[in-house]
Length: 62
Image (cartoon, rainbow, N blue to C red; front, top):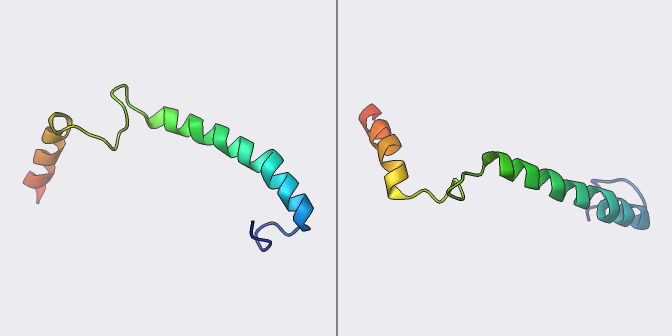
């Protein structure tokens, strides 16, 4: 933990980060991932069949 980010004594920073910030961040991150996740899985792992049409459209524009 960087003391320049949260300007409290070490023990207060430790309690704040471990007890409040990290648990809430994990919950909000999970909600954000659910909102962009596809039924097929991760949006970053696109199969060639799913990407063929968008890629051909992009290549025509170039």
